Image (cartoon, rainbow, N blue to C red; front, top):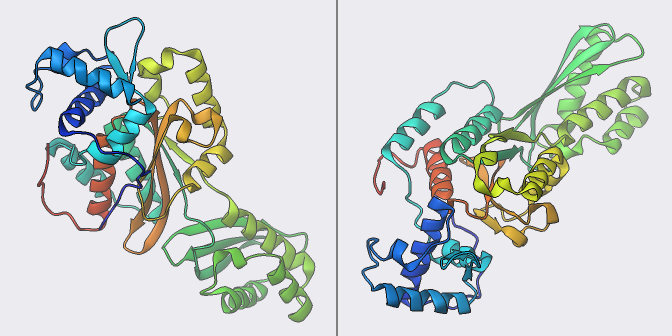
Length: 353
């Protein structure tokens, strides 16, 4: 299963030595959160250059806008442009250990009753391994088709509706009536709804359906209206699920009151998070760094999103929120491995670091 990263394009490739220096600085800064000096990286594998040579390369990378120089230190830190070049051109996506693979395997073996639970398990696993916050949202209603609708009478004026979609997701809701309803009526309604909606997009539960059942099939509006309204509400509801919300507060970036406040605001704005996850391309891993995010509240963060699928079933989107100093290689490696594991396309532990 291919999982390409959506690249921004339009960049001039660097010379090999500059690439190695930039990669070393980005990865050292991700690890330490401290400005990186030439001395800090000169003895790293693949960087057997003199301190003077590395300093010259760092100066050139700064001129190209890929590094920023900190006033309080002789070291440099990656700029947003530097992170973007790293993600698009230098990132190695096999940064996952044997222990992490074993942990993922055990977590994904958990028995679940609904496919939505798999997405939540995958989300929590990513958060536990990367120590970042994860956000999940279900698939778009336009791509889900109705497999079956079941109505269950709970009392003379209360009924449960269970909607099963073609990707295995289940949506349930309770419907209350102002008049009594019989078992026979429930059976007839179940037949009519399935006859009209089976195989149709879930978004078809709407006003035209209500009009058809009332005007043409002569059902009572007091009976049909609450069914349509409540079912429409539950299928359109975008359930945003969070994991590891406290993880980020341990990071040095969150010593800034402004960054911490922005993050708290993000957690409170479910509509903002839903918009964030619905942005991007269905077949790609999408990486948004700092001000590449459309919303001002997200300018201090990086976000990685990907569509969560099992086979051809769209289970929704998982997003990972972290600082711009996010360990992109770890995040993307874990996401790719989980996707492969769920789709049974990875039976080995090859290419493990």
